[in-house]
Image (tube, rainbow, N blue to C red; front, side):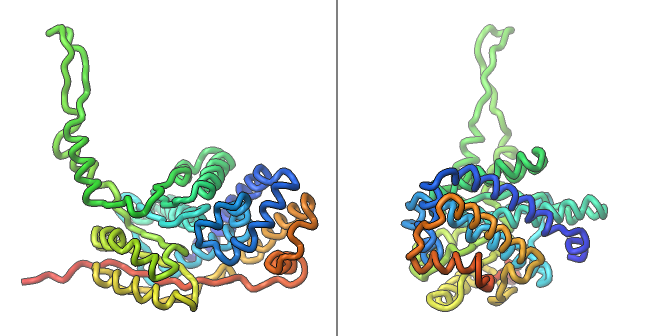
Length: 367
């Protein structure tokens, strides 16, 4: 972490994402009608950003990206730093595979990718190979508009990095349904498919078409066993009600039970309302599947980071751009008035999330 601070790592990574986001927003918001659609979505994005109906509004994905993405990126970075100081940031032999559930436009996914990429840069500079942790991100997101936005943003990041950040392109894709992730069943299905996959070729000696198995039994098993092996599982503003947790309980139990020792669950969510009951429910599921609580609901915020003012400045830049296109849009709506005030007169404090982190330890041996 001293190296991160001394080398302005967060500032550099943030700047790259902010530049890519600014490029994307200018591409997506070109007319007065586009700007009006963003302003009209602001109340829903502020109050109901966890509801699917919000993202059926034309400007919602863009409004979310403007108001939340960079702030939540910095917030997630702060959470990952807390995992380091708590001694529970997951590492792996060949790099960390990350499952980000409810990815949306990708603030947590981009933050996790950049954080582990920074560790890999640290390894190269120090010669300590244990810190070489190239990340592999699997995103889970149902909404098409936010998937489109994240896809476009990842491509811009890739292009503006002079095609150096190959791994970021994984965020162009997403699994659409968390309930479709059934690790053991999917591994078995993949193993059987690979086991009987054949390569066909023409044998000139026998003058006929013949085929050979492409993989040995061991090769097929090794490939299949790598499927859905996650070291870090992120739930950021996804588990928002007890009913949501209950809906996904079978999948949560399956994925958490399947996780190997050293795996970490990172939960980021709100405070008050239904959240205490949600966290209690998640805590029971985690403990029943071999995880132990490591970080008990600590508050994290972009205000804790060195890019706090940059988050605000980027928001102001987009606000001024929207004003040029649609200066009087939705001006009578209270939530819009609050946003206008935030970016022109009275800056509001950055929001915070509670961070709960669990690490899986080895089950005690039985005699």
